[in-house]
Each structure stands twice: as structure tokens, then as C-alpha cells.
Image (spheres, one colour):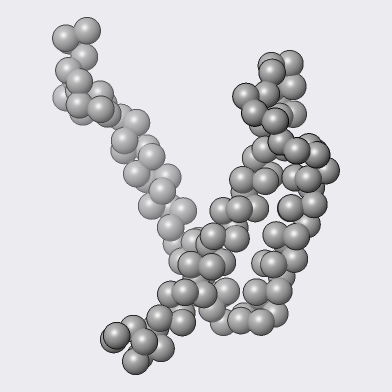
Length: 114
């Protein structure tokens, strides 16, 4: 209720929507890249109309992102700022989780035991 009264609910909702659309875009792009990189192996699943369906969805998703920017520029700038600030933390946590600590790997198994 506090989020609704202060107007923060609208901000949180708009930020979440942009993040969801960006994730969708990354999925469509990754389908094309993975299929090109591993063209020799059989695809684990069939994508209807591939690659045209993926390209159409990329265009539609880019249109949604552009529309969001024109409709709500301020919240989109907030979203991109949050995303840009999150990247250094992601790479820091990725680097820290890859380093073994005191002979124990990142899932907690003692390396001397295997």
C-alpha cells in the first residue's frame, strides 16, 4: 500500500517491464547466435519458422523497447541506470564465485576428497 500511495509502485512496475522485455530480446538473439555457432550439431528443439520467427520477434521487441522509451523516458532511464550499475556487481560476484576458497570449490566440496 505504501508503494501505491507514494507512486513508487508505478516506477517499480515500469522498471520491471523494461527488464522483462530486454530479457526477451536477449533470448531471441541468443537463439540465433547459438544455432549459428553450433550449426553442425542437431538442435535440441525445433523453433517454428526459424530463423524468420526469431528475427520477427527481435524486430517486435526492439519496437516495444523504442515505444517504452518514447512513452516513459524517465523510467526507462532509471531502468538503464540500474542495469548499468548492476554490471560491475555481476562481474565481481562471478569472479569471486569462480575462485576456490581454502581448498573448497564453489559448490562446497573439499578438493582433497575427490
